[in-house]
Amino acid sequence: MSESLITKRALANALKELMAEYPLNKITVGDIVERCNMNRKSFYYHFKDKYDLVNWIYYTEFVANFKEELIDSEWDFIEDICEFFYKNKSFYRNALQITGQNSFYEYFGEVLSPFILIYFESIFEESKNREFYVNFFTDAFRTSISRWLLEGAKIPPKEFVGLIKSAVTGAAVKLVKELEQNIL
Image 1 (cartoon, rainbow, N blue to C red):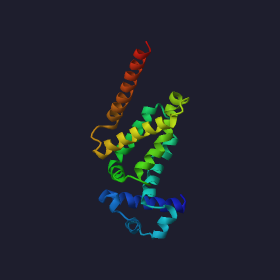
Image 2: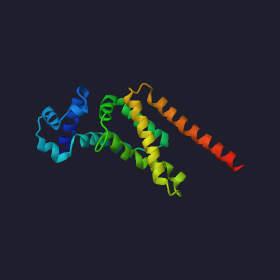
Image 3: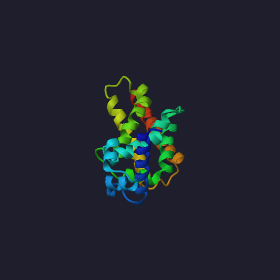
Image 4: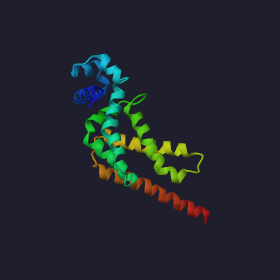
C-alpha cells in the first residue's frame, strides 16, 4: 500500500471516528489531523477540505468496489446503495446534514447521475429534453434516499427500494393508460 493511501485512510478513519461523536459541521480539519497525529499540510496535500474527504470515503468504500461488480438490474443498484448507507447510516446521515457546494449530497447526485443516464438512455435517447429527465430522476432518487436515511432508515433497504419501484412503475403505468385513452 502506498504511503499516500495510508495517509488518506488514516485521515478517513479519523473523520469517521469524529463523525460518530460530532456533527460534520462542528468538525474542523484541525480536529481531523489532531485525531491521527498529522499536520494540516498533510491533509491539504491530499484533500481540498473535509467534504472532499467524505466524498473520497464514499468513492473508495462504495463506488470503486461497485464498478467491479456487474449490475443485475438498475433496481439492484439502488438497493446496493441503500444497503451500503444502511450499514453505515450514522456516518452518511451525518454527511447528508450538510447541503450546498462541495457537500456529500451534491457529490452523491454527481455519482448517481451517470447510472440514471444509462438506465433511461433507451427511453429518452431521442428526446431533446433527455438532460432534464436525467436530472429529474437523479434528484428524485437522491432526495428519496437522503430523506429515508435522515429519518433514521426505519424501513429496511429492500422494502424501501420496493416502495420506490412501486411508486415509479405505478406512475408509469398510470401515464401509459392515460396516453392510450387520449390516443383512442
